[in-house]
Structures are given as structure tokens and as C-alpha cells.
Length: 579
Ligand SMILES: [Zn+2]
Image (cartoon, rainbow, N blue to C red; front, side):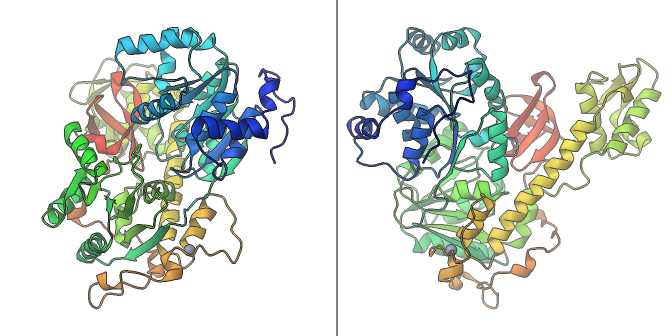
């Protein structure tokens, strides 16, 4: 049972009447407002927690009824419930549904016209609305924030809360300020919701949002209607055959995730004369992406071949299969992507086509590509030795310092951020500070070390999932911090039930055996034709919105860039092109 709220948090005005929401209140609201007979696992615990004024974090799979937890709470709380979400389409969908249920819900985001935004702001200012959905950047609008300060905020909900954490696979800088927003709003109870977060990411979420003594709920991590399988494939043609067999043998529609745009194009080309195929990746136009998504949603495509740009906010309950042609960089990402299958509870298949060489595609192995402290000092010294108001090209600086050019570029970009040096057209650099070594870059450089180590750990866990001889569900549960008993067996994975696709292996290949011994194998060079989209630190890349910038760090599918005038930003790799 939930512990009663103690008087630990005097800065929050606890409304006594709501703290005592009775069983009857909850059940009546569930039945009369939402037309549901009973709670799904975890929902009631979360609702009771937030109604009692305590913070909560819930890790629940998509489709397990996360949104009901705050929607129902909002109806029983006296003030306004704020729901921060990055997904504009989802907001529209949810407010429409809530309006049908007679709930006073609003959304405010960049998808509305200025007039609509103003109208909503006025309505909220007039005390209307029980639930307000908004994107995090809305808080930057001062006038609007004043409006919020005049309202009693009863609950602050952060949806897709893993976006808060820079260790998460979907970090969004706009989420970073939410902790201070919560404080300025008088510290209402915070409810953080996500479908996926490792214990490390969970802790980071708590810290970033300033959550105290939260109730933690880790929901049913792998739904029993999902059959989990990993198909070892020794080469591309075996892999293609396995994919085709899945498409032939599995009824309904599904998603095929690939790591690179090039592979997505190739597969779609190869399969499209036999099946209706939709193609979705970051290099297609938004019109093409919309068409692909619509065809998929309407069930007109057998499969959508997609990079991980596809899927966030997709609400299609009858996805019958999710195939990973390449494994993603972390189990969180895998769990989230595969978890899109079978939300309707019907049997569905999550297949991963494993090939040991694919680890190179992840672009995680950036060892030695970031500058270390010594190299940074070398560059700073070279800059110090330059007379004032002279320009030197990057190549020359790098050579004098005996540091690789790309690393030199990173150091200079960092120094520029600290106002020590200036970049001129044509890649020439000038010292503007008297002593360039006066700045301390050790923090930035230590960050690189940490990121690299964490990325590598995440990838190792992903590979353990692919190569385990144990129940795959067990491995996922352990990774997310659960402790299944010694005799735990899920009953819905290939390790227990046997591989389904022996026939997909090429003659003579050892396709049915799991190549456990390859888990620690040295990195196999990526064949030329599989050149990943991964960017290298120190190189230039162009972004559709922010223009050209310098790659400072690569973390999974996120790239940290310095865009000069547009500042430091973390962007998705698939929205970048080589400059
Ligand atoms: Zn199992």
C-alpha cells in the first residue's frame, strides 16, 4: 500500500480533501467518466500516490494505460494538471478523446495558429481547463508563464520522461529546464512517465526533475503476447532471406527497423515487387514521410521499412511484427521499438536479425576519436604562441600541436565557446584571449570519456540480449532493475520455445545456434557497402534547421553539435548530412 504522506515537504500546499480520495471516488470516476470497469495493473497505485501529494515515476509499456493515471487524477484534484509531452499529434488525439468524455482539456503547442494559442492562453488564464497539454518550450513564453503562476497547479506530469536524461536514448535539451519550472510553480507533485528507462536513466530523471522520495513503479516489462526471438544471421543474404520469411509467414502488418538510410532504401527496393512496402527515414521529405505513415496506419502496407525516426507517437494497436534488421544501440531503444508490436494483446512477433558485424554500424566505437586533456593543452599552447591578430589554418595548428585534425577542431570549438579563440572564414583561427590555457576544459573532456563508457555498456547489454542462452525476458527485466526469481521463465521467447526460422539459414551455416562465443569478439571492420551514417567528432555536418556546425560528440543516434550562432544542440543523426 502507499505510505501516507508525511510532512516532509512544507512548500507544497496539500489539499486535504483530495488526499482522502476514497475507493468509491476512484471507482466512480473510472466508471462514470471513462466508462471502464476496472484499473489495469499499476494504474490505481499511481493515482493514489499522486492524489496523496507524493511524487511518482512509472515505467510502463506503451499501451498499458499510462495516460489514464493523470487524466483520472486531474479530475479529482482541485487545480490544473499540466502534462508536458513532446508529441503534438498525441496531444491532439488525447484532448479530442477527453473532450468526448466531457473533460475540460486543452493543448497548447506549435501545431496551433497564433490565434488558437492566444485563445487557449486566455481560457487557461480565466481558470478554465482541468488538464493542459503542452510542449516544454512553451514555458519560455513569459506572459504565458505568468498565466500559469496565477493558477493552482495540482499535478505536473512529464510524459516521455526519459527525454530528461542525457543518458537516455532520446535526450531533448528542452526537457532540461523542467526541474526549475517545477520549483517556480511551487513544487506540485510530479508524475514522470515513460515506457522505457534503465535504472540509471530513472535516477537521472529523479535528479533532473528534483523529485523527492518518489513512488516507483516498474510495470510489466514484456507483455506475454509478444514472442521474442533473435535470429543469428551470418551474412546479408541469410538476413534478407530471414526477413522475407518473416514477411511471408506472419500475417498482418509490421515495422522493419534498419540502422541506415541506405539499407532502408535497398530493402524497400528489394521487397516492393512482392509486398506493398512503405519507406520512412529522415532523408525523405516530410510529404513522403507522411504518406508512408498514412499507408502504414491504414494497413495498406505489409511493412514499413524505417530508421528509428519512425514510431514515436505511433498509435497502431494491431502491429503484428517488429523486425530489427540491425540491433539498436541499447536495450531501452530495443524495448521501446519492439514494444510497439501487439498493443491489442494479440500474439505478435519481435524478431531481431543478429549479425555480429552490425555492432560496427552503431558507431559507438569512437575510441581515440575524442581529444584528451593533454591534446587540449597542446592546442592551447600553440594558440598562445601565436602573435595577436594573426590567423592560422586548422591544418597547421593541428600539425604544430601534433594532434589529429578532427580532434584539434573539437578543442578549438570548445575554446571558441569559452571566448578564447575566434574562427574565420576558410577554417582559420585567431587567439583573442591573452592566455588560452586559462580556461579549464577538463569537464568537457571528462564528459567525453563518460559518454563513451556508457554508450559501450549499453551496447554490450544489447549484445548480451542477442547472444544470451537464458530467457530473453529475464535479461530485459534484470537490465531494467527487476530481480526475477531463479526459476523465472517467461514462456514466450525463442530460448525456451526454440527458434522458429531454422529454414532461413543458408545451407551449411550454423544459423540455429546462438553464437555466444562471438559476444566478446573484436570489432570486425564494416564492409564498405555498409558504411554507417554515423558522424565523426570534429567533422562538419549540416542540419536542416540550424545550418552547418561541428560535431562535438556522437551518442547513439544523437549528435551533439556546435552550430555557432544557433549554439550547442543535440540533434538526431538522421537529420544531418555531411557538409
Ligand atoms: Zn523467456
